Picture 1 (cartoon, rainbow, N blue to C red):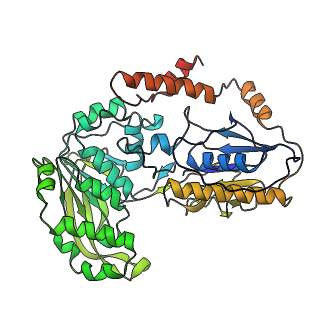
Picture 2: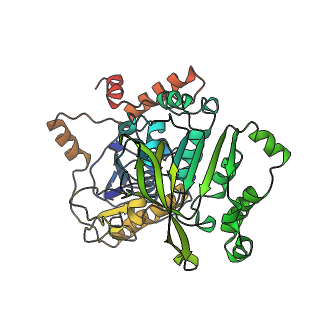
Picture 3: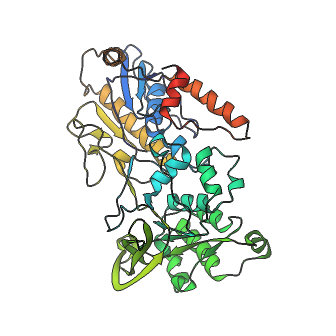
Length: 451
C-alpha cells in the first residue's frame, strides 16, 4: 500500500510475476485481441498494490509481460514488513514514511514512530538498528488505530507467546528484557472516533496477563448516541462500553489474573510536547492538551479546553498517520496530501504512467481495499491501451535496464535469488520451531547469494 506506480512500456526486474502469498482474487475479464504486440509493463514496488495490479494485467491481457522492481533485497512489502508477527493473516499497514508530530521534543531519544518500531520487530533492514529503550515501566503510543494496537499488543504479550512467530531474533531478545508494564494509547477525540477495528480491540481485551484501563466517565451518554451509527461502529463502541463498565466474567478474570501488565485508552488528549528527563538526554513524558469535541458526524473535531496534563513515560511511539514519499522528481507528487495526483489511477499529465495503493488514494484501507484498488487501476490501463491512448512504438523493456545496471556494475537480486533466501530463512527457523528466521542484513543476504 506504499508508493506504487508503473509505466505500461516499462523497465524490468522479476519476470512473469506470481500472486502475493495471501488473499483471493476475483476474476475480471477484459477481452483483447491476441494478435496485439507484447504489452511490456514495469511495476515499481513489490507490495500488494504492485503484485495485485501485475496479477490482474497478466490475467486480462494474453500478451502482457510484467516486470517488477523493488528497492529491498526481498519482495512482498507490508506482507513481510508491516504485519504483526502474531497476526500473519492481517495485512493492514503500509507507506514509506510516517507523519511527524511537529511538537517540541519529538527528536529526543526514546521517541520513535510506530512504523519504525513495526519495521524493527519485523526485520525491515532500514530499522534493524533501532534499539528501542524498554527499560521504563510505561510506554505512550500517540494514536488509536490498528497499528497502535498492534504495537501495544507486542509490547505487552508474554515473550514466550511470540517464540513461534516470525518475529526477529533480535527483537524477541529485547522484548524478553522489557520492563514495560503499562501502555497508554492517546487519542485527540473520543470512543466514537477510534480508528481501530473490533477484532484488534477484542484481542487486546483478551490479552493474557494484561488488563484494560478504561474510564467509565469517557463513555457517559454513548448508549443513546450509538443507536444511529453504522453497525460496525456500534458493535465496536458496545464492546468498549462493556469493557469499561462491566465486571469481567470468571473466564476473563482468570485470564487476567495475575494481571501484571495493563493498557489503557486516554481520550480527548492532544500531544503538545515530549517532556525531557532532568538531564535533557531522553524522553520522560508527554504533555497533553485536554480537548472537547465540536461538530457532528464526520465533521467532529477536537478543540483544546485550555487544560493541560503530563503523562510520565520512558518510551513514546507516534502512530498518527502515514504518508508516501515522492517516487522520482519526474513523477508529480502532492507533498501535502502524500499522493501522486491522479484520476482513477492515471497519473495527471504523464501518459502511460499509473499508480495504485496509498500513493494513489492516501493512507486508508486494508489489503482487500488495495486489491480492489489495484484491479481498477489495471483496468484503466487496459482501457487506455484499447482506446489507443498510450504512447506507441517499440520499447526495449528489461534489456535497456539490464544494460544500464551492467554498465554500473550493479547485480540485481532476482526472484530465484529470493527463493534461495526464503529457503535459508525457513531452514533457520526450523531449529527453533519458528516459521522462519528473517534475514535482516542486506549484506548478509548478498553474501549468501554470492553477490
